[in-house]
Amino acid sequence: MESVLGTAPPRPRQPIVRWYRTILALGLAAVLSAIVSCASENSGFEYLRLQVDGQPTLAITKKDVFIRGVVVYFHGADEDEFALTSDDARQSMTDHLVNAGFAVVASRAGGNAFTDPATLQNYRELGSMALQHYRIENMYFLAESQGSIAAINLLASSFTPVRGLAAIRPALDAGGEAGMWASQAGQGAPTLQKMTAPLALPAESLDGRSMRFYVNDDASPSESTRITEFEQRFGPTADISVVSCTDGGAESSCVQGEDIVKWFTALG
Image (cartoon, rainbow, N blue to C red; front, side, top):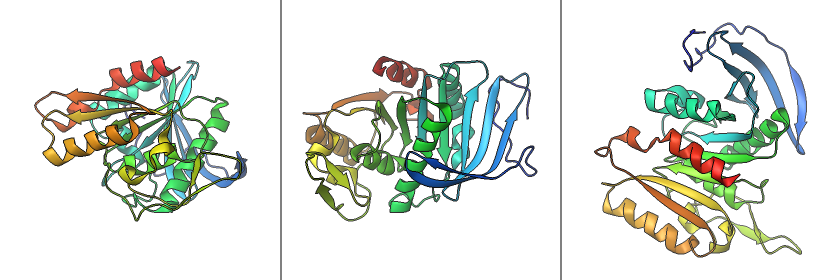
């Protein structure tokens, strides 16, 4: 491990600690294996490498800081669980979250298999296991680009209550065929059976949800149109805010860790 505060963990070749165990997380069977807990005395951060549902994951927390919530990170195209620390902007975002007391967890989740139902299930198990591991109930979603497909689908499902979703340049019209939805007996809210494009979700599926989108101010007309369509479709019953990224359209300008922390904190 590097001794610099917030420096990303190396991709481990030889795990420092390795053991195997099987656990049950909120009724979901999952295998937790190849656990690696690596932390530098000087960094103050703790990194946990493990496998959930056969997918490599990474969890980052800060030592001696009360954990106030779990942030499940949904990576974008051509990325993996290490996207959290892949560049200065994302490293800064992760530092802000961890220093504020959030446990940030990410999964490889099948790589670019953004519309695969198995990806949705992997994130579901990751979130459930993180809540159990850190013994906390507050959960938040943080997604980038195509990762928003799974994040919004999971937000719209019957998964455990999520405080809110922050999405950076979200993909809203990508996904599989229209999802199959069915109301559970005695319940008005629908239950997701398969992945679907966020814009094709039933309007009532995001009732009462809080979402914050970070979008380049020079986004293409089609991207702007999709954001507007999403607001019109879900805005009447959901809390949706849009933050304009004004740094000359640079990709990193929408990675606003400080604002994300403030918004998550305001949600409680």
